[in-house]
Length: 296
Image 1 (tube, rainbow, N blue to C red):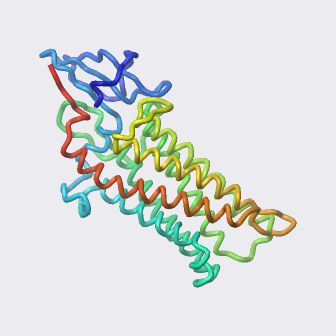
Image 2: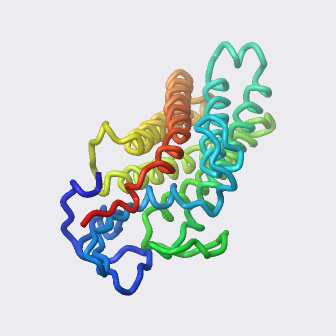
Image 3: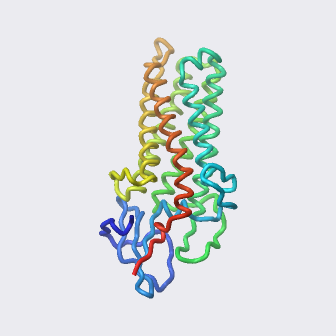
């Protein structure tokens, strides 16, 4: 619970609050504010948490729905699309599947998965960019498609992740083409894979830092922490896969196909689990008041 965390700094977060409120304490990783405490005019204490507040706003949710079925909720779509994309990547990295369908269709499976990743990442960016700035009042702001808010760690995480998915789109699409030389394969296939993996690693670490309000945290009782932690593990595994996929020019073959497939499969499983946990996180946030926890 936010009330149990020791807050040290007194910088204001990006949100605006009623003028009668006072920000008494705040904290977060480095220069970013992800948790803050306010005192209202009636001396109530109000806690604000960046991730909980962003995931809880209703502007993009046309219906509450259930945990497993809520097509009117953007949070539900983010989890489902990431899960489908992760499933495609896990399937594509299975040697038996690759041998059964052939190289082209195996690469096509990766490409389809990358489209689902990009769709989910775009919705996550939209969720982040459209998070209300007015805290403690009615939600009246419009949906924003393009913002510049470098003071927000969640903005950096969502933006970098979206760029990373585009790199995977390029990587998986060019992998379907067999006309490249080994040098061009390294340039058009492996390089986007490397850059995409780096983006995913940076994005997931920022999300992990946001949910824990520190550059390192350990909170196994927090569902949001598990989501961020699993995504971080998945990104590390994708990085290992990119290392194994490095094209050895003298042979035109990946450096370590086993490491490449193992890293991809492990990362995909981690991303799948993190995506599935987004579904109960959404309904948990709907029913909790952690993001606006108040007490006298």
